[in-house]
Picture 1 (tube, rainbow, N blue to C red):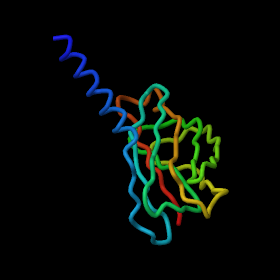
Picture 2: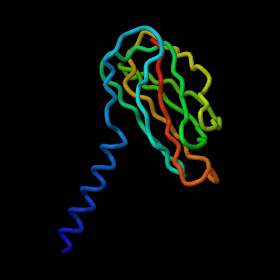
Picture 3: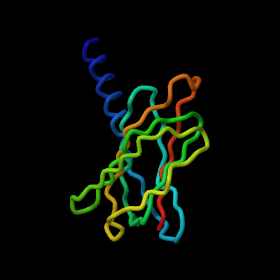
Length: 137
């Protein structure tokens, strides 16, 4: 019985870790805004990492919010080669809103991942916010 419980807990934790960090494969290289990925945001402070694979050079990023308001504390863009860019958003976005356009400093470098620290705004009902990450080529 103990082995079964341990197995189920290990399976759950592994699934949770893989789900939060599933790679976003970018297959389009067309100019304009391209959806990179999306994630559901918890009511407590949540941290999600969008891992990019493929045609992942972007000039700018923006965030779109669905289902419920979200409070974004910050985001970090990590580039291939090890450099990072910290972006202090510290903003609350209502349902249907999008962030300002975030101009990237390292436009010629491929993005390895984008990490968010955020939470669904309490009092917004039972829906968790869905956040979409968009990139401009």
